Length: 84
Image (cartoon, rainbow, N blue to C red; front, side, top):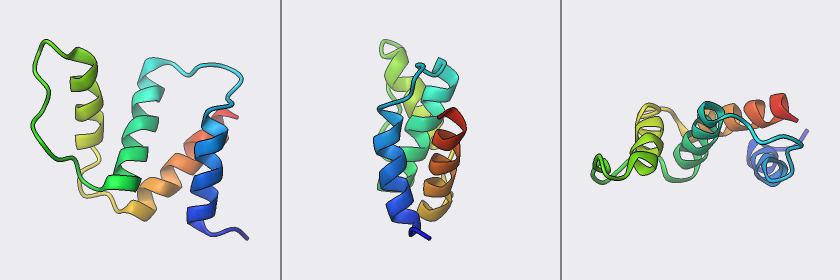
């Protein structure tokens, strides 16, 4: 069986080939899981009201604070597989 990192790498590639574009809520979850898996807990200041997209992304990522990289990778893999 492939290692989690290999599965994650495959899921990242597969995320770019989804037959349908996920809804915005799912896209935010994909983004947050990816950022948590690759960078860890959110950092920096929360974007202001004039950047609603950046703010939504940051909030989604910040919502995963404390989640381990392995947990985030597994969540990402599971989510992409469910969308494929």
